[in-house]
Image (tube, rainbow, N blue to C red; front, side, top):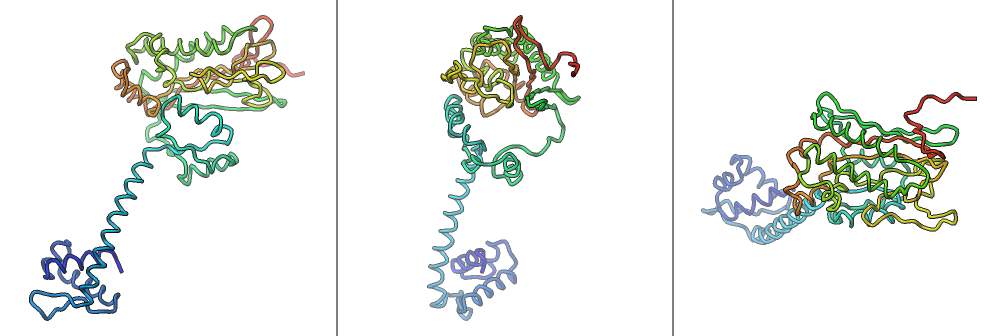
Length: 357
């Protein structure tokens, strides 16, 4: 039995005429008559008295009509509820993350960016191994665009390596021939101020302050390229630069890629938490000789993070047409690995080859 047969029967009961009922259901009369006959055979009873004019319902048909209306109404209401749920679900991003991130980072990140209603942590993922994340992406259980764009606009490579038990973490971004010229300018801008930040590295430098300096450089680049029309100071103060770069400037590098101790004040493990406005900052310490850190400023167009500014007080301060043009270009990140030395620093990523003993 099919739902449309029940709908056919209701229309026939209302019109009392096969031809008019068939017209309303947008089928030919022979097809409509055959569906009514199949319905009667399925129910094991005659529902239509074909000997009267106009047609009438048999006692079984009268009883069945009540049931048909109840069933079709329940189906209609249920369908609407499911469609509403699907629409609500489609507006939410399912985020897969390890237990440590779901417990400690994700809640504060959602609250800081006021996107709690848009992101749903996928709790099944908290105990997954790395391969299971990719399998979940393929199954569509979590949200991420796993299809390459028809016209690639950029290439970002975040590469890791291990040598003699120590990790490396290097990122580069390139624009394709199809990229907007503005995107190329932004890549160069990020690369330029990344080198200025690296030049500041030395023992005694507060990494949190260097992270804040990154946001000032980012704001100046946004002003220079006319992506924003407010001052650099206002862009940082309003949090706009953090929508364009939500992660920290860098992290400790060692035996692990994200090495331990980045948020410890001393050797006893006294916590040194990140600033409230920068919960994603992994390194909050003062730099010392022998520390190896990454310097990885970024610039991204993430609609979910920029939407509050598109609707808020800064809506007139951003060139949204340019932002929308850049949305399919992906992100920009330039990352080097640097060791702190007694007289400053040594860029391990861009230095010359080291002869092995």
